[in-house]
Image (cartoon, rainbow, N blue to C red; front, side):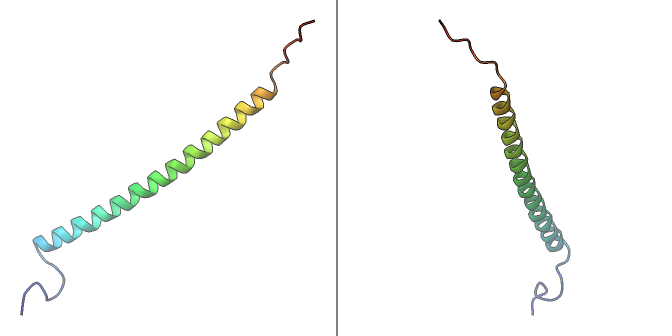
Length: 66
């Protein structure tokens, strides 16, 4: 029987397993952050476009030449 097949990992194997778990959690957090930032940027862009459109509606009309 192999020592590695029995029970939870110990020593360096436990350290590597924990390191991989942390790396996976970090990557998931980064992915969530990227998704949230993309959504926030899209919302801000939409608000900016709506504001620009409203500002353009409020511009005075140019006089017509006679």
